[in-house]
Amino acid sequence: MNDSSWGAPPHTGYWGPSDQGPVQGSAPAGPAYDAPEARQTRPMPVVPHVADVPEYGDDQDDDRGAARLSGPLFRDETPQAQTYDTPQARPYGAVPQNPEPMPDVPHPAPQPKKKSAGRDLGAAIGVGVGLGVVIVASLFVVKAVFVGVIAVAVVVGLWELTSRLEERKGIKAPLVPLALGGAAMVVAGYVRGAEGAWVTMALTALAVLVWRMTEPPEGYLKDVTAGVFAAFYVPFLATFVAMMLTADDGAQRVLTFLLLTVVSDTGAYAVGWRFGKHKLAPRISPGKTREGLLGAVSFAMVAGALCMQFLIDDGTWWQGLLLGLAVAASATLGDLGESMIKRDLGIKDMGTLLPGHGGIMDRLDSLLPTAPVVWLLLVLFVG
Image 1 (cartoon, helix red, strand yellow):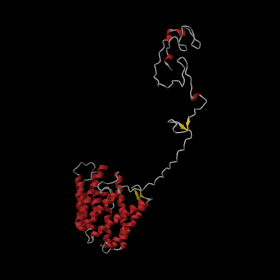
Image 2 (image 1 turned 120 degrees about the horizontal axis):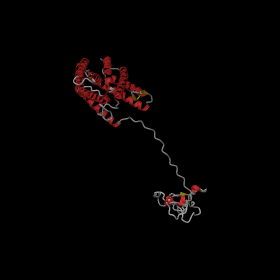
Image 3 (image 1 turned 180 degrees about the vertical axis):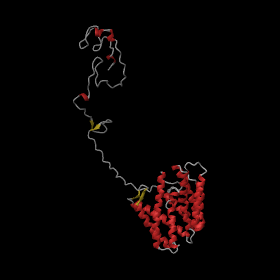
Image 4 (image 1 turned 45 degrees about the vertical axis):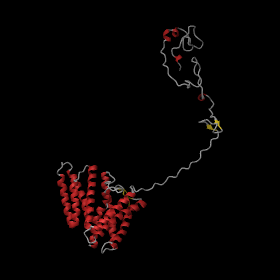
């Protein structure tokens, strides 16, 4: 709509009054149309419009005529796109007369998803080999050095466990009496046997109770309970490794214990990763399968027969079969127990000290509950 639609000069025809009377096709003359009040209408504000774009359609009358509606929407014919025979004569965006069909692009077949171990396998193997060298070297060179290795592992494991308990649950198990008592427990087990281990365990629990009294009473019960549990779970179970070492063939017994545990874990991992389909305990550890458990049992029994026959004095192969079966069961239960603790804490690993493995406690999970089982069976079998 242009500006003459509102408040036009007197000589206009359609919208304004005229001094010469009504014009054919105009509004009738008369007072209602010639009155000054009728001519004093409010002008419409000028609305800017984009050049080259018609306001009403493709064609326009002059400002005294109405806009004629035109274009494809008001005609019977349908607009035809102009075609061109050659690409050189075709402007940009024009439709070709005989468009060439698009070639079929083959879609790559979906690749099957590969199984992943979930960890850096290279780092895990390197760290495992390094730890094995340190353990074997200290085991066969000087027994006391190996006892020191056990004590260091116990202290680091206690630090990881108590740190995660405080971070995730707000439980402040006293680390100082646990670390001192744990290291003393390992030494006492090596020097005085089972009697020394039990006495040191009792003294460590008492030290935890007294040490926690120096802080406010809020949370005392849960703190000391966690402290006593940590003392039993880490240093006391590790003491049985030191007690194995006191025998004449102590180094061979400890080596058998380590080999069977590692072989059991390796067999469970290899068979479960390749053939595992049925979950063993999905609510605790979704990665473990029944096929993996069978692999652990098979590998451990074979390794146990070989170790008892060739490493342990007066040992026989059938004793090794029973020993391997017991190790596979205890190692699996220990791994599930550690997984239960980590699920309760909402963490994946107990630490980050060992690349590819997690923390020290993530490597001790199978070893700790297996140590008293191996110690007891070896005492029953060969004394």
